[in-house]
Image 1 (spheres, rainbow, N blue to C red):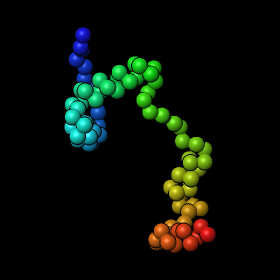
Image 2: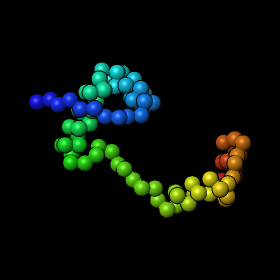
Image 3: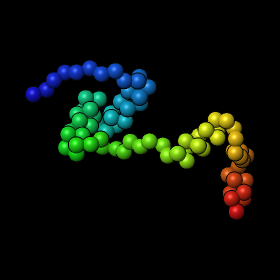
Length: 83
């Protein structure tokens, strides 16, 4: 038995995802059904959701405050600074 449902999604994600699904020969509905089947089978999301670590949050805060950051003009400059 199939049911019909509706959901609200961000247009940008929807449009970008449709391109990927199409390249795989899938419709949006096919992709949603694959996702739901995976969740039902594994009793979990088929990807990992994680809360950022305290260290990552501290680094993001430093960047937002422009503290304890360095900006390099090139990859070579970055790597020479690491040595």
